[in-house]
Structure formats: structure tokens, C-alpha cells
Image (cartoon, rainbow, N blue to C red; front, side, top):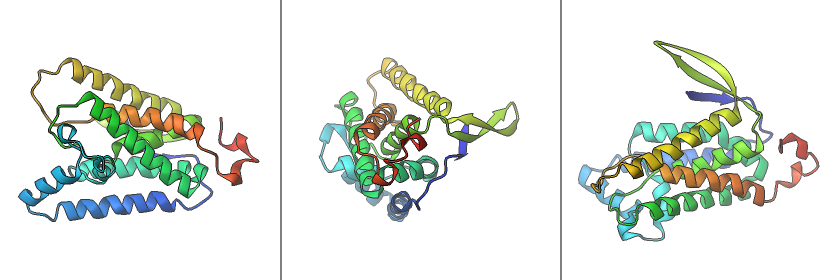
Length: 224
């Protein structure tokens, strides 16, 4: 299932979400302009390597990506869900929220991979936090979704709670499945637990952070 767009309108222009997308694209283009050896050094320097952990990598790692599909997938999900969460929290709260989700997701991944020397990169953990916040605040929004049926594709409208819980369950079980099947040989792949940690952090933080003042008089518009 591939979400295409949501039905929840936002009342303000999502400036922070747009800037996050621009920064991610810019860093990616710079990263892939480097020759392979320099690129590997760049990723090792600014990605998060659990076995050689450097605190700044909690933030720098989220702006690196491993390829075009990795980048496009992340900014696609951020564009669908980010504008409404930004609209709800306000720009500065949204920045703090996004960074906090990135840090928590990275720490969760670190906890499960303490001895790994494989750099961890990508904005997926922070974006998972945005998705967790969307689940809590807009569970009844409708998501237009591309659905494969044998060899054909069709679009259907599904409730946000179904799409997001389905996504979270997949991350959770793949994470523990990969942990159980581990042979001790390090291999690259998806940082499932970073997704799980970010999603849970986002769902919790959006309730703890103050709602933007312009919506306090209309809580029924957002807290459903």
C-alpha cells in the first residue's frame, strides 16, 4: 500500500516541512556528488555508528540517505503527514518535535545495535514520529492509497488509523524478526527499531507539547 495524499486540510503553508525536504535533497545531492571513497568517509563521519558513537551524529545522520529511493520514500511520507502536524504545533514547536523524534529514534536503534560498525542514516525515524503524531491527532482523516490487486493497481480511501497502525505493526514485527534471526554477522538494512522508537515518541510528544494558540479555542477540529 502506498499513501498518495490525505484529506486533512492545513490552514497554514508548511514552511518547515518544505525546508526539511529542501535540506534533505541538498545534502543528498552533495553526498552523491562525491567520489565513492569520499562519500564513504562522509557517511562514516556524519552517520551514526553505534560502536563509535558520537553525540552529534544523532542529528547529522538524519540528513543523509543511501539512495534515491530512500530519499524519495522519506520526503514523500513527510510531505503527506508533515504539513498537518506542523499546522497543529506551529513552526517552532514542530522543529523541536521533529528533532526530538529523530534523537529518540536514533537512541532506540543504538540500544539494539551497540556493537554495530555499520553507519545508520536517514530521516525515517523523525518522519515516523510525524506519522505517530498524525495517528493521535487525525485518526479519522482519509488517506488516498495506491493498492495493488494481482497485476493491477487501484486507489482507495482508507482511514489514517488503519494505514498508520498497519505500518507500525510491520516495523515492529520485522524488527523483532530480524533480531531473532540474527546470526551475528553484520549486514546493512532497514533500521526497524528506529522507526518504532520514532513513531512511539511522536505519538507521546504531540500530546505533551502545547497545541498552537490559534487552535486552543477549537480543539474539536484536531483532537478526535
